[in-house]
Length: 391
Ligand SMILES: Cc1ncc(COP(=O)(O)O)c(C=O)c1O
Image 1 (tube, rainbow, N blue to C red):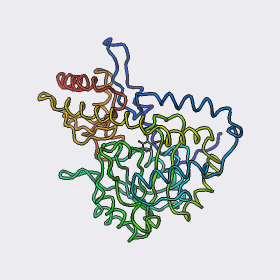
Image 2 (image 1 turned 135 degrees about the vertical axis):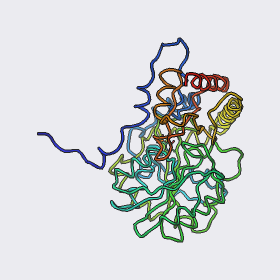
Image 3 (image 1 turned 90 degrees about the vertical axis):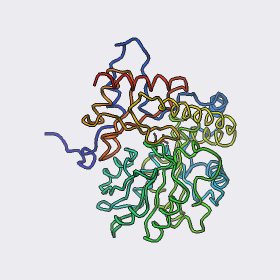
């Protein structure tokens, strides 16, 4: 006899990216696999960052714990960056540094919910969000993330689902998996709804830097009393290509951060000290480097959109932005997973089926194109066309 495992965890599907990687059959056609299954930047982190980390490794105290909330300099730098980027008001005491945005999400949701509560989530969703909700014993209540006439979710759909056990609405913009960038008006609408119903609007803004232009992504940080209803989550992983350093942040009221402090103490005690210093360097010294990479991604996005304009391509680009394209495949009778497995096994194109991002997504595929050069986009379209032929 052996011990039991937690059914709230064992019920959850295995990590999707690992599963998809098993669909590849390399070496069949002697051509490069287009691996577009994960939002991992193809570029290395900045050379200056490597030099700084080498220098930091010798800094006295770098091997030690930091404050649970993170080093004061990084908290202050994040607050200053958000205040400028969102043209709002964020203070250092409202920021908690975390080991990546996934940990930020985990800690934030644990702090504001109890088992049996529910959370409103647009579908398609980022699967780690709903995996975590399930592990916490929470019910996810779904609203459409986009409709025939709109690329963003509607606060009115959420309003209908809120009841006494609803604790939060979770949004992700720019969105993973659709790439959609929600308008400031829609985001404000969700915030007003959350505030009026005494729940939290939790926004995962991992991809905020990839939005086009420099206008604030939304006006929430400029809204007096934002901390009554808004919890902001950020990641250093993508814009600075620092996925392995594991640095993110929660920005929220001092009241909820006091609860998050207890959770962080048990989860990690603190984010890696070296990684925090690396993130501080990135935030304060790599703006020009980052802008160069963001411009490169915008160029890749344009190439992808042009590639989808091919007349003979029956896959439809439903939505695109940041690092993602959400595509409707043409096979009405074939489930998304089967299409994705066929693309991986027979056409050297690895992407994820919509079914990994929630119910009702069988007609869709997610293409995460940070790993593809602009010059790869015509090849991407050609392989999709190739997959149409044998059907
Ligand atoms: C929406 C979203 N949130 C969070 C994460 C995880 O970010 P981090 O590496 O900071 O944990 C990802 C990674 O793909 C993501 O797409």
